[in-house]
Image 1 (cartoon, rainbow, N blue to C red):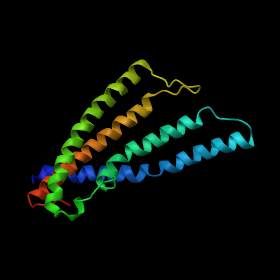
Image 2: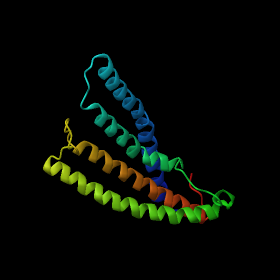
Image 3: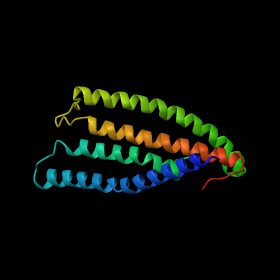
Image 4: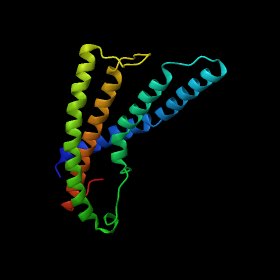
Length: 170
């Protein structure tokens, strides 16, 4: 494989590894928000209008920004009745087709995410709730998460292609 492909894979893997390991702690932030909301409501009889929505936004950031890391670690759910029995090259060949399909799908998602983010920024879109937070921050996070998954899917495609050609990249 060309050197730029190896460098691309190396840097995208490093980016998603770093972001994924940082973002995994957002689950604790979400738990803290929900705990604070529950304590506020039960102990002080002061329900918080923002807590559930903030927990939802935190969870969305958690799984969107962690998507590239999950792809990199091959931690997605897989239905493999036959897959595990196949030789490594055959798995890589099949994975290259699924990675290509994933790149196509994520490209369409990225286009929609960018369009949605652009709209939120241009018109100052707010959520239809009592709290009415601006939607731009979560849409920016959504678009970045999709972009990181797309970049990782391309790296996976190159890695599988190299495996099929007998030149594994680690």
